[in-house]
Image (cartoon, rainbow, N blue to C red):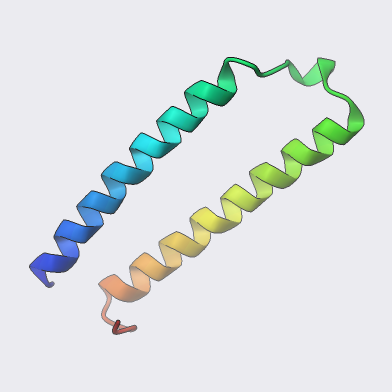
Length: 73
């Protein structure tokens, strides 16, 4: 495995964790409980969670393809 790949991977991991924590803290302060949400807000929240899961899975797939040297960039 290329040492440059490991460095970029670790930087990406640290950046992702930092961004995720900062977004979670800023959004979490203003968050309503599920029972207080309107139907539109519930649908929006479900779509956002689904989009996040899809992006997470896509990121894992790209990482594995790159790590297994199937895709060369």
